[in-house]
Amino acid sequence: MTGERLQRRLAAVLATDVAGYDGLMAADDEGTLARLKELKKAVVEPAMSAHRSRTVKTSGDRLLVEFASAIDAARCAVDIQRATTGQNAAVPQDQRIEFRIGIHVGDIIFEEDDIFGDGVNIAVRLQSIAEPGGICMSESACREIRGKLEIGYDDLGPQLLKNIAEPVRAWRVHLDAQTAARRAAAPALPDKPSIAVLPFQNIGGDPEQEYFADGLVEDITTALSRFKSLFVIARNSSFSYKGKAIDIGQVGRELGVRYVLEGSVRKAGTTLRIAGQLIEAETGSHLWAGKFDGPMDDVFELQDKVAASVAGVIDPLLLDTEIMRALKRPTADLTSYDLYLRALPLIRAWAREPIARAIVLLEQAIARDPKYGPALASLALCHSQNFLSGWGDAAVESEQGRILAWRAREAAPDDPMSMTSAAGALLNLGEDANLLKPWVDGALARNPSHAFGWLWSGWIRTVAGEADVAIEHFEMSLRLDPRTSRRAFHLTGIGICHFWQRRFERAAVALEASFHELPSYAMTMWFLAACYAHMGRLVYARGFAARNGIVPGGQWLKIGLLYGDPVQRELLLSGLRLATTEQA
Image (cartoon, rainbow, N blue to C red):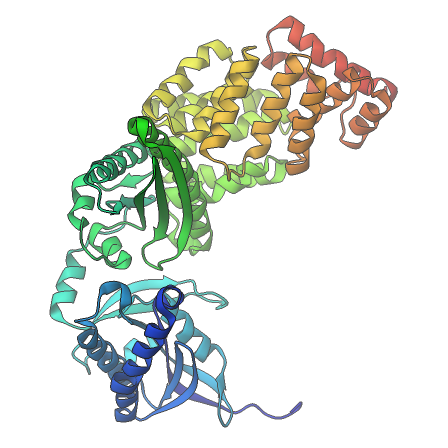
């Protein structure tokens, strides 16, 4: 009731659920329920009775239990997991009931038949990051039981748990010496996205498909390896899991990777269907799933197409996932890589204040590592955008951008991301597009699946006057990365190419779509205003220009630095002069 004083106490809380429960139910709901009921009766209930527990909530596969001490909670959890392992020994891997358990000691709010508060929520969130068959506990719980039970612990460090305000230091329990030794030998995660491509399952058992599946995995591994931003496990290590029932979390630990790609190949008449899914190893979260169909009469072409498509999707997807991870890290722990990742979404905003904040982060990254190519190239891009948009002293921004672009080229000549970003910065600063073509062409030769490289190649061809080639390159970038957050830059480039060919209606469609997605991008505004003017929509063009700060003698005059072709340059400038006439 309102005004009643809440009742609190210190307690050990154990939360548990069944790993992959929804999938088990989808495959065999009756069998799953029967096995779960049997395990509860044979394992869970006896363990809780033996360790002075109070069951608070039970629903479906979930259980919430309160204990008087952390030792009782831990003993109960260990008994459950060890006994469940024994019960599962004769059960097929895809039918096993495996519990995940979280334990926390903290303050709880209690009523007669329920408990609430962060003490409960933390236990539930720890359970969600525990492995199947594993136990994850908080620092407060681990401190209470350390040295009192014959189990070991792995320090997972501070964990950002959903709906918990502060990071919680977590510990993973291992139940025997063999597990402890295996974990101690596991390689550390690299300081960039790490991935293993597991052997694809040959559904149907056709030997010809087996060769195709193995070749496909090898091609995908090779395609991903071309991304200098990724750490990719070699084929031989990944194929050690071929034909085995695997646990994704265990694969991630044993290979030292954060992400795992698995898939299957199935024959349907004269068509092959390839399915793949990308999984975060630690949590089991599915980040992406895709399917590809193709005729069997040219399997090598299909193999190449799938490998390029999968690689093109995965690189930017992992980059976005790593950005979110970096944004959650405590600022005291940031590396050069983390600072670079934090800057990327600010650069993509393409507005003055975010660019200024990105510059601060990138300068910190370079101070830690002066030869970090991606940070150098991204910082060059920021200064080039300041120059192009009139944000700051033009001479200073131009000089800084050029120096940084060449530093990036010197530091990372084999990294497609660094090379294409450096080329893009120099393009914005007025460098001859024909001199920059070899930069992006070399990057794309090293990595044909690099969507960002195709984007900058499109821009360089746009400035060079190769409109139709540029459109092809923009479209290739979008095919490789259909979920891109940079779609506005592709659309503006496509719109400009149509504008050069005087296809003003098609140009306006692309430019309007880009403006809707990123209204702060000055290039879009300039070409859209000129496009409306050349379409005869002068009143609308002038209104659009006035609303978006396009005035006579404005920054748009710098367009002559980018577009050397006098006919193209005059087409744009004449349109902008028409759009700004009544503002003079």
